[in-house]
Image (spheres, rainbow, N blue to C red):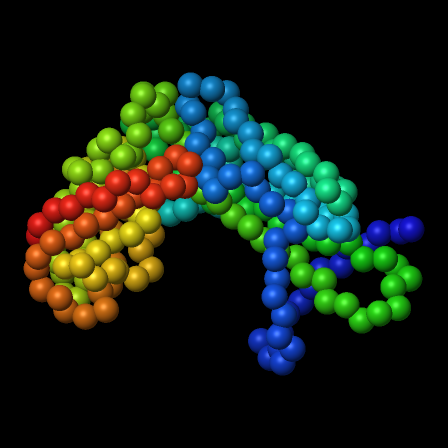
Length: 228
């Protein structure tokens, strides 16, 4: 049986409802690259009932992240049979990276299901792209974690938004932020030695801010609080 991989083009005007689930699953919600080691790895598993062509690549998380050429993903393209597992190796390329703060990328993994050449039924094959955070932690920072320094975050208010300044060398990935007990929508992260701004639902005035950050395992940590 010959297997074919066909690119799918999607129109903005699709009237048929469908649900897409990732066929190729990444073994973890994030990858922490220990700067004291030459490489790290992440496992993949094909939970689909058919063979998938797996494509992987990285993209910088923000403008301060070094070039994507600083880290190599191998193999970038391979076949993964139904139910099988494989490992992606993540290796430093030798391109200089900051050693005084973390660098963050998105690790993208796309599974493209195969179709049979002689298939007579009309089917819609969807290539689903999954992504997780890939954080490079320099050797000088490997003995601590963001949770131990998150209380150093400085909070303020600008118009109808809340601002957070991060003086630490770590990315602070938020699981939750609340202002005066009301949850702030669509929170993300604040980069090392940078500021982030998150819009509020309404002008709540000054008061108390509380937050939780995600640890190295993708779990929400303890609640922290401050006044602003």
